[in-house]
Amino acid sequence: MKSSYETVIHCSLEKVFLTVADLVRWPEFLPHYRYNRYLEKGPAGGLVRMSCYRLGYPLSWVARYTIDLAKRRLTFKHEKGALHATQGMDIVWQFREDGENGVRVKVTYDFTPRIGGVLLARLVLGDLFVHSLAEKTLTALKRKMETRLTTAEAIALPAPKKVPEFVRGRRIRRRLSARSRGPV
Image 1 (cartoon, rainbow, N blue to C red):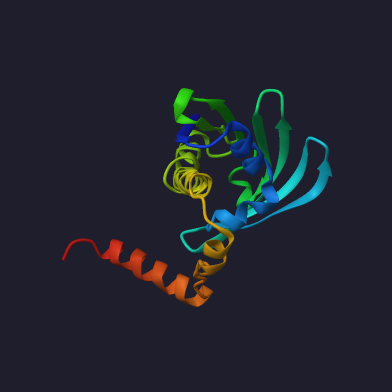
Image 2 (cartoon, rainbow, N blue to C red):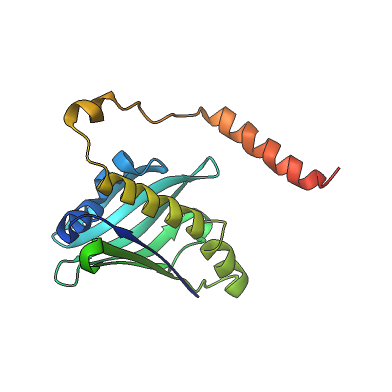
């Protein structure tokens, strides 16, 4: 099962590609990411542990990461994940010039789970995991690449708001319990 997301970013191809290829720096401009850490590093990628928040809960996974400079392509192959739900997922980032508009960035997810079949694939590739994270990632990347701040403006920006765990959990429970009650 596949799903794709794309956006056009008004910036140079080289700058966008190099920014995305630098995984360790993602949490600096992707507020939903907690960290990206190399477990093994090679000249064209390596094994990375990545972590982000989804619905206020931390998720993490391990992926084999490959950088293809010639094709301007980044690939991820999920090797481990929370409850092995995303194990085997392939993600490809493609970058190409889009005329005078800038750079077209396309992210494609391909996932066929070993257990759970089509239902699990739909849940993971749908609203539960991929859709929300892909949208947030491309939106934040576009904002970072198209915003040109002076050093003073960047320093003056407020720090990302960090909500304590217990508050996040309460908010989610409230939201879930409101849904389960149904219409009044």
